[in-house]
Amino acid sequence: MSEANPYQASDIASQPASQGSMPGLPKTLASLGSRFGAALIDGLILIAFMVPGMLFIGWGRVGQGDLSTVVLHRLFLLACTAPYYLINGYLVGLTGQTIGKRVFGIQIRRLDGSLPSAAEWFYKRNLPLLLVNQLPVAGGWIVFASYLMIFDSRRRCGHDWIAGTCVVKL
Figure 1 (cartoon, rainbow, N blue to C red):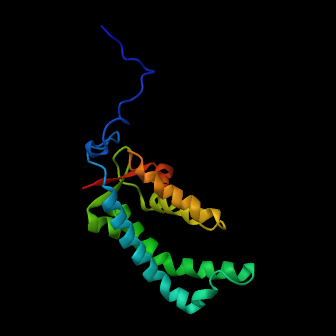
Figure 2 (figure 1 turned 90 degrees about the vertical axis):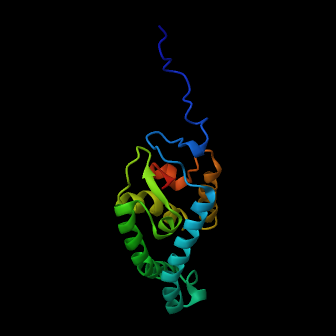
Figure 3 (figure 1 turned 180 degrees about the vertical axis):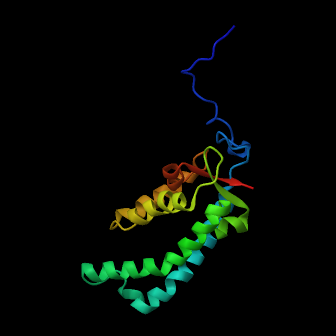
C-alpha cells in the first residue's frame, strides 16, 4: 500500500490550459483572443463614458495645473465613469460577465468555481489597477506588466491573481 507524498508537486500547473487547469473549474480557460476582444469592447465602452467628461474639462488640461486642479479633474472623470462600473458590476454580480465578456462568451469565476460578487469585481479586480495607474510614470508600466502575466500557462493577469479569479469559456 503506497501513501500519497504530501510534499509532491501538484500536476495542475503541468496541465494545458485548454483542459481546465484551475482546481474546481470543469470549464476551459478563455482564450487569449477572447479575453483581448472582451477587454477591447469594455475599454471602448469605458472611453465612451469618459469622453463627455474630457470634453467638458478640456481634453488637454486633465493632467495639467496645480495638484488640486488635477485631483478635481480626476474625480470628475471618476464620476463620469461611475455608470460604467455600476452597470458592469451589476452584470458581473448576476452572471460573472462584463458586457465585453458576454459578447465573447467568457465568464469571470473564483478559483473555487463560484461567481464573484460585484464588490469583489470592483475592489479586487479593478480598484488596485486604477490606483496603481495613478502613480507617475511607473504606474502605467506596472499595469502593463500586470496584463502581460496572461501569457502564463494559467492565463491569469495580475488582477486575476489579486482577486483570486480566472476567466473561463462558457
